[in-house]
Length: 67
Length: 256
Image (tube, rainbow over all chains, first blue to last red):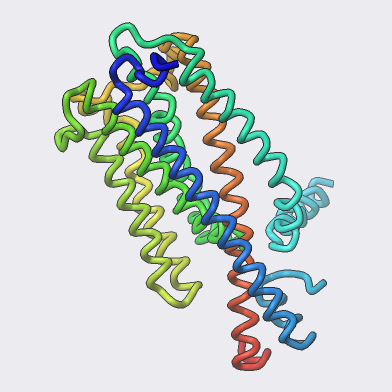
């Protein structure tokens, strides 16, 4: 096990490479999901506040079927 | 008959261009894609770190290749997606195209950053240097990173979405000249970085025991890219809906 972490003497180069990949992947996934949730919450709040007529207009604008 | 087919093909194209259809389709794809990403990356990591041999010249540092090379592939593929989507946005005004281009940029930039960083960590012990300004592959990858940053900066600074989309698309297309430069940099200027050993006309020259982890990690990273792209496109579509709802509330439906 110690041999595995030692990486033939190159531990200081191999592990930071994998650590950086993990960090970047986790940060991207977290940020993408957080942004999606934030936007979804905003849509919900705004649609609740708006009347049906305004909602239909907004959907037409973004090219969606009002449903 | 051929005319009928043309019409139905065009209708299908527009059906998928519809953001609502995209939202429904992507919602169904996300979980299977995420599961497949985890599976392939997990298997890839096992082979990359444990079940593959050290290189006879490079020793254990060869394991850096299994994150470095897929990152570099995705850095270029991300830009390719961005450039093609930008062209589609400019020419066909496809309503999802600039959403796709904008969403691909931060993912591509992140992979480019990883390729540069892991390359540096590999270069230090094997080449004896963290960075070499004289190497065309290194410098063209750094240019790619700055192209991504410039593209994102354009989106961030131009308020009006239609103008931002056009300016960013033009930048993406102009910058795509850098892709063949990166690809052939190791042939045109043969300095430090080694030439291609996987995607070659005469087939891969890399040992099968190393091709397996590389292939698995490459597939895993590609699926991660696709999954993240879908999530970010969904967020971007919602962001536009938020914008439209706010405009509708502020100025009345007639003014939007």
